[in-house]
Image 1 (cartoon, rainbow, N blue to C red):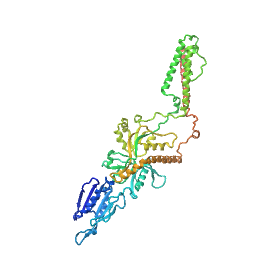
Image 2 (cartoon, helix red, strand yellow):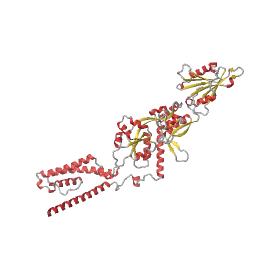
Image 3 (cartoon, one colour):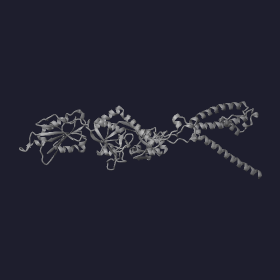
Image 4 (cartoon, rainbow, N blue to C red):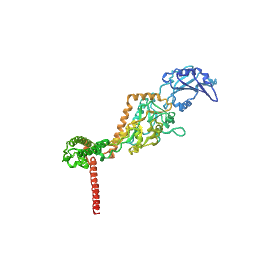
Length: 568
C-alpha cells in the first residue's frame, strides 16, 4: 500500500509536494484516484485565512490505527490540522482483484481530546457524500481537555495554602492568569510539581534542561508558570516558548533595614556634624576675643578681675552657652556690647537645640541607607537570588558596580529571606516579588524590618511558559492581551498580597509572636519619655562625674608632688 503525505502552508503553496513510502505490496491508490488528491489539494489551497500560518498535513494511505499513531507523534501533537484519507476495506472487489468505485473515508485530528480522530465525510464515486469541514477551529474550545501546568511555589505568583489536609490549594497572580486562560479556552488544569530544588532549571551538559524549562521541553507540561522572564538566555527558546507578556518587571534588591543608632547619641542629633564644629569654633574664638578685649580695653583697670584670666573668660562664655545667669557684669562699654551680641547668639542657638532635642529624644534615627548599587558594592554585603539566572547577567552588565557584585553572588534554591534578615546579603528579584516579601515580613512588626533599594535594574517581560511550536500560542496570546487590557493582573497581585499578609498575621497571633505595643502608644499615639529615650543625658552625667574624679586624682597627684618638692 502506498502512503502519500502532503504538507503545505496555506497561502504560499503553488503545487503539492508529495513523498511516497511504498510497502512491499504496492497498490497505486493515488494514481487510480487523481480526482481525490486534486479535491484534497484544492481544499488545502483554498482554506480560510484564519489558519494561514499553520502547517496542514494531508495523509493518504494510512489505516485508521496508523493515522491515530501519527497524531500521537511529537510533530502530530503540535499540528493543528491533520487530514487523513483512509481506504475503506469494503471498497476492494475480490472478484476483479482490483479497486472499484469504493469508499475513501476522511478523518481530521482533534488536539487535546480523548477522541483524537473524527470522521467527517466519505469519498464515493468522485464526490464527497457530505461537505466536510476539513479544518475546523478546535483550539478556541478544548472541550474540557486536561492540560498539565508545571509550577513550583514562588510568591506572589504561585502560593500554596496548606491549612487543610490533602493537596495544597494554589493561589496567586499567575495561578489566576492560568485559570482565566482555562475559562476562556475551556480546558481543565492539572497542576504538576517541579522536582524539589530545580526551580526554573539549568542547562545540563547534554544540552537538555532540568526544572520547569526541562518539563516544557520534554512535553511533561503543556504550560509553565512561576515568574518566567521572556528571555533566550542559554538557548531557552530551543526548549520552550512564551505567551505574550502580561507584565513588565524591573529587578530590585531587598535589604534589611539597618539597626537604629543608639539613643545615647540623641543629645548630638539636633545638630549636624558641621554645625557642632562651627559651634566649637565659635566658642574658642569668643573666649579668646573676650579675654583680648578685656586686656586691651582702655577702661580695663576697673574691669572685673575674672575677665583678666583666659580660663575665666572661657568659663564665662561657656556659662552663656548653657544659659547660666551671670552675677557679675562687665564694666567696659566695648565688652558690654560684645556680650550683648553674644547673648543674642546663644539664645537663638539654645532654643534651636532645645526644640530639636525634644523631637529627637522620641524619634528613632537610622544610619545612612543603601539606595544604589554603588552603595551596595561599597557596603561589602553579598547578593543572592533564586536560581542562577542573574549570575551571567550581572557579569555582563554595563554597570560597573553590578559587575563588581558578581563575585559576591550566591544562587539559592530556597529561603532567601533568611539571608536578608541576617543582614549578610541583599536579595535581587522582580519588583512585585520584592513588594510582596516586604509587605509580608513588615506586617508583623511596628517598624519596618526590610526595605527595597531605590535603584533597580535588568528589566524583563513576564509571560506564561509554553511548549515550543505549540498550536495553543495564538489563542492564549489573544486571551492574554484581553487580561492585560482589563487590569486584572494588577488586581490579582493586590489580592495575593492581601491574602498572604492576613494569613501571616493570623499565624503570628496564634503563636504569640506578634510584637506587643504599649497601651498608651496604641490609644493616644503619644510616647512618654522613658529611660531609653533619655539615656544620652545620663551618659553625659556619668561622663561628667568620671571627668571630675579624674580631675580630682590629677590634683591629688600634683599636690603630693608639690609636697615632696617642698620637703626637698
